[in-house]
Length: 555
Image 1 (cartoon, one colour):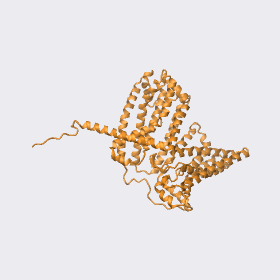
Image 2 (cartoon, rainbow, N blue to C red):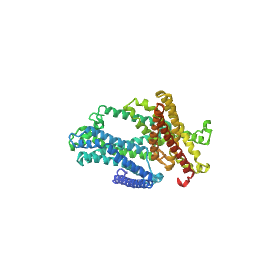
Image 3 (cartoon, one colour):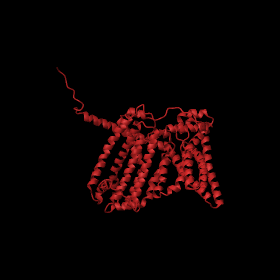
């Protein structure tokens, strides 16, 4: 019997060459994707004056304003870093901050993969999945890193001035890079695992939303308790140092080993930490590629039985049958009941509220004084921010029907305002005013109730005007939700404006109830109500006129 034995692929001398050529081809394709994504992002920003101004504003704030705020401490740290011994405790804390920035960047990019256009199916079909994953990871990481480059360069420049030697910030940047890369990859893996859990678990969307809120608040409270415990008895942040998480304090020991050329003592734990960080970079990248390749191919999709949205039909309950606007409000509330992700754009408001609540950790008694007023301001802010900051933006697919089935968009806009007022006033009146009855006195509570009604109405009109001024119709992914999110300028501007206007109103109520010169208070109220009413009424009128003259070409 004659024949030949075919060599197996593993026996072939060209098998490893083939794998190497496939990897090189994937990297080459990924490079094309990265260049395309970055060029598209630059052109998109240049074509949108609002985005260009927003990026320029953030660059000035974080590239100039923040470094000026911490100039003195950074200057002193640079001088200490050039001296002997090297401040390994503070350096470990700085490395922890660098790692925290990397974790946030990686986690945010893993959860909210912001991509331009609608060419996803074409990209997946034109290049291998591994090339798609590598290209998207590189493009998103570069875009995210670009936002912190101005701040990093400014801080390193201050360190150089303080040290009197350009070598010190250069060495610091080199030894901080593994910390940043390892943390970024760890955050990306964490974000990918959350996306896997989101696809595999058959829990409701509301359960996920509540879990997200609980984890966010717990993380914030834990970080505040940790920072305050470390600062007890310390002379500000200049003496802040991370505690020993493990024997040898890995990050501090790594700082000692990394800055050995500058005179610090080398520790074995620091060398092991450096090796672990260097090994974590390729391992983390391999895990990211594997996870996201499987996510791209849909290998983690949940079964058909794990539905997370309700399909039952609901009639309009009687209180909402009073007018067409009330019916529209009910439909918005019902949509949110079925899918809480319609409120994903309120993320900055959540983080801002947590940041402003930080005073509770320094003075717990302030919760009793500021709690009712804070609940009222939160409620009236929610009344406008929930549904009014991007009117008609979520309804782009239905715009032909909406714009041709009603003589005016006023009905739709009033419905959005009413939908936001219901949960907003529930918080302002139900929590804030009720607490004011206990903490303050009945006259003050009545005044705050009237203020809540005024600000809820004016805030809704102002938010409608801001949404009409900066309409957003393109779909994008933010907070793991792909939809037409409101402009971040409108969200942040409305948030800070609501806090300022609400605080002034609360102070006016307090001075009105507890005495004072009647004439100045009357003048103050006249000016306040006039400005607030003009903002709300003007915003509503502007939105109605803007959208009544709207055409499908404008979208």
